[in-house]
Length: 239
Image 1 (tube, one colour):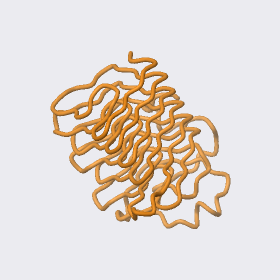
Image 2 (cartoon, helix red, strand yellow):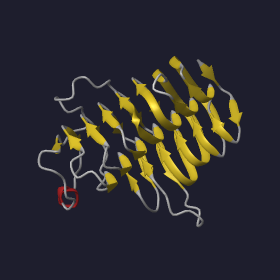
Image 3 (cartoon, one colour):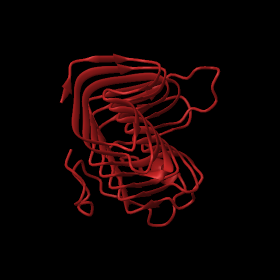
């Protein structure tokens, strides 16, 4: 456990690692701490590369993660490897320019995200006028990879442009399966280049008219209308 400390840096900033290359970060908790940097800033690692990199059973709780570009509650920028069985709780994740996600700001096609959640957290960015690439997501800012068995629970997502409660920007290769959101958001994915990225996903919204004004593939979403878990998603960890 890493508790009650402060990390400041420039590029590639994390509580444990700046750059995670061919390594496994396993069974680590970051609690009551502050991580601040410029580019690629994460609660545990700033930058994850290589198919051999693994982030497993890692948690951040009551942590402030702040940077300019590519800021994530767990990993700032994820080009390869896996993030699984992790959570971000009671945490503030904020970028001042572009790229921010509750788990990671960017998840690329050689990476994967599985069995993770964001709970009671605040994910936001303050737009710099010099940037036109603002991507913010409750789970992932920009996605070209596979996301399974993940959810956002009782958290807030706020920005001016290109933000979604789950994903800010989902590219053609990005797929999302067995995920759900508990909050009432009409913008679940802001920019979706993949016309059928969602399968077996669930939402809990009160304003169905607003939700249904979006165009989704048939059967992509189901409404469970309760604050409890959808019974179909029994493999997800409890919040």
